[in-house]
Amino acid sequence: MIYNEEHIGLQETARRLIDGEVNPHVDRWEADGIFPAHEVFAKFGQLGLLGIDKSEAYGGMGLSFTYALAFAEALGEIHCLGIPLAIGVQINMATPALALHGSDELREQFLRPSISGEYVACLGVSEPGAGSDVSAIRTTARKDGDDYVIDGGKLWTTSGTQADWMCALVNTNEGSPHTSKSLICIPMDTRGVIVERKLDKLGMRCSDTAQIFFDSVRVPQRYRIGEEGRGFVYQMEQFQEERLFGAASLLKPMEKAVADAIEYARERKAFGRSILDNQVVRHRLGELQTEVELLRALCYRAAAEYTKGKDITLLASMAKLKSGRLSREVADSCLQYYGGTGFMNETPISRFYRDCRVTSIGGGADEIMLEIIAKRMGMTGRR
Image 1 (cartoon, rainbow, N blue to C red):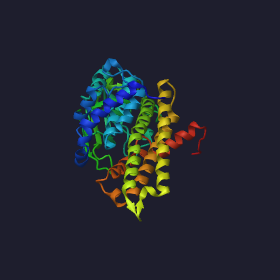
Image 2 (cartoon, one colour):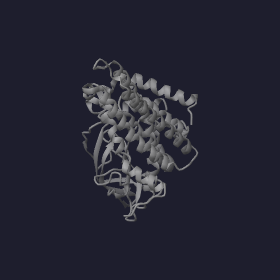
Image 3 (cartoon, rainbow, N blue to C red):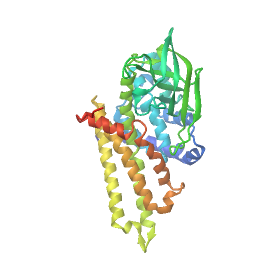
Image 4 (cartoon, rainbow, N blue to C red):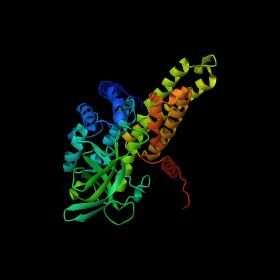
């Protein structure tokens, strides 16, 4: 897959917004530990960038996922990973199932304002004791008349302190772990929704992350996305877009880390010559850039296959695995060439070093990706 002029034009639109309205404020938002999601999302929404591959009937552009991937790559121009993460939640984690399986009424109520940027969305899957093991979630939704009454809680919820609604995975029956779950839209101002605290994280500092409890939260059954008991399947579908979007959003930050390291190593002197005069440094940086290009090719292929309606579980899992491991490798290697300067918070590589670490954890840990890959290759382990 090669981007055409329309893909490139979309990326240029995103870059202008990023350069003018986002990057000038990133350092302050990082220091504050939060960015104004409603304000920022409204600006992206005004340009149609929060609904690139969503239906025009609800304010989207109606374009293929390849355009969403091009946008993900452009988000890598932001001088942190926290804001791209939050935008990724908005468009590729909390809303794909709603766009695909939700009723017209539900899409009008939650999808349209999420595409416009009026609403901030969050995804409620992870819980204490149920991170990568999605089947282990314990939050329940029991029927009471025409409503669901929800009890339980969610953890590590991106944008949780600012969100207007949550796409929540909950247990709606006592069947098998894979058929007992449903996705439900929960307005965050509903009585009984408790935002317990904003979590203090190693990286992604400007993206707020919350712990949330549900105490007899009552929502109409019509807020359920699609069929009851199909939530696990819908969530697995959402994961494919999430994982591919996340991998693509890391391409530019990795390239920037390599380019910045080259410039610093060229100027930095040690033992009478620049660091870049050492062959081992040049070769390492060249190798890292080669790996980034290989990941880009994998992302492009997966997006092209996804657009054709093919199952990309294997390719998306590979991209997720590789992006997490490669970003850590790039961050660690490049920081090393800065010496003590790289360990200072004022140096951009230190932020990338902190921010990228969660990639190998969130959205399915490396070990989960490897197990998916192994199963798709016909390998199964004994329990």
